[in-house]
Image 1 (cartoon, helix red, strand yellow):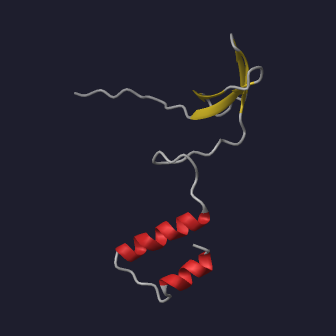
Image 2 (cartoon, helix red, strand yellow; image 1 turned 60 degrees about the vertical axis):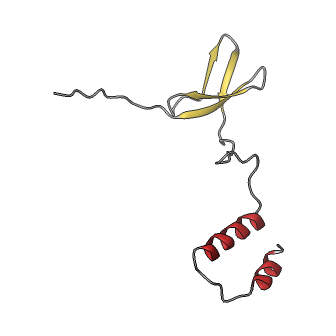
Image 3 (cartoon, rainbow, N blue to C red; image 1 turned 90 degrees about the vertical axis):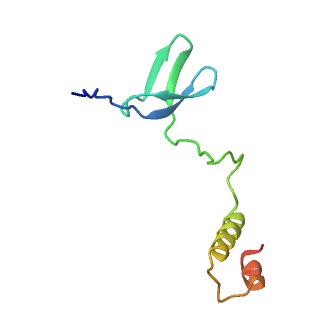
Length: 93
C-alpha cells in the first residue's frame, strides 16, 4: 500500500527590508504582514512586482503585442478582412 504525505504549500510573497531596501521572495502565510530577523524588519509588499515570462527583460508594448498576435493568427491560416497596411496604420506599427 502506498502512503501519501500531506504537504501544504505556502505561497511566495515579496518582503522588503526596511533598513536596507532589499527585496526577497519568502514563503509565508498569507496572513503574515511583517517580521524581524537578524538582518532587520521585513515588510510585505502589497503590490507584487511584475514579472516577464520566457526570459524577456521587459514587458512588450501594446504595439508589439498586437503585431505578435496578428502574425500568429495569420500563420495559423486566419486572414483579416483588412489589409496589412491598414492594420499597421491603425496600430502605429
